[in-house]
Image (cartoon, rainbow, N blue to C red):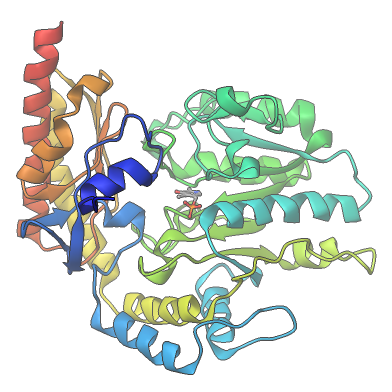
Length: 436
Ligand SMILES: *Cc1c(COP(=O)(O)O)cnc(C)c1O
């Protein structure tokens, strides 16, 4: 059999995220990455605007993270976590307990964000079961959320743009309030929480927990909402005896301008999910933290154990890199870097707001979003190659063009990203205009 070249083999045999084998999308082969640049096989270098889905916050090929991984490999790459423990897990748990709210004292390590969400849901349901509340099994969330692709997580993703229509018969039925609308506390009006309030009032006896992405909703719509909404949610959860799970898998570790987004609302969750940037983008690792009430409550009957245990739980290699990534982050000037990125995004993206194709421009911390008033259809298959030709890596979806670059990006490289967005809008305007 003739040996296929790489890209042909890839398109014929390998699934990519949300892809089709019969109608593969165009691929670019990356051979290395350093700082904010990816090097493609054809020699081109492109500036990464995605941080590999929120994760590579320090850029690629970081000498200190490389060193941490190499050192750990020479000790041990992995050992099971059942009955055994190790320094990298202990060090990382210490750091996470220190870095997060004082009430969050217990850490469960998982290998991906989706699994961290599954664990959070199990914690909440098990907590109420152990208290004798066997009816508290539902979750309450808001529309436009995204919490992962496994079944428990999918069931709390947006019911329209998630995968509910495909898996409707197997997905657990949860409660969905309207997505928050107020983007800033200055815009706040009580009507914004009305739908949520009436759902929790009417159903709290069935609700184990509320689950939300605080302040920024990621893959479910790239929406920004105000801290006051979170304060109201926390207060209603307390009033109606419902646990609060915050999914900071995308927002955690500085992305929104504070270490965790909940800090801006001055509230604490009962359960917190972390992932994505935890290892600085080196490998999969996630964590679910909880407070004393939840941790002790799960075992209130004296025998309850938390029913989860992934094979690669607390992988030492991942934990070592995560420890180093947190050390690099906390000793860096990340607040200023994120602030500078925010200012520059405001200056350079806001002017696009006046373009006819643009519905809204939104900026929060090191996240810049351009929402178009039309979806980018399948007929725009030329777009990925066009974007790479601008010397950047940006991956629009639905009607959204967005960037969340590594925090170390300099002003010049960031300008190249924002001006590429301008060129993308321009090119789309031409094509879409001919369609109308
Ligand atoms: C990415 C993401 C997840 C899922 O994490 P995976 O590591 O892809 O499983 C969950 N919640 C949020 C908010 C995310 O952005």
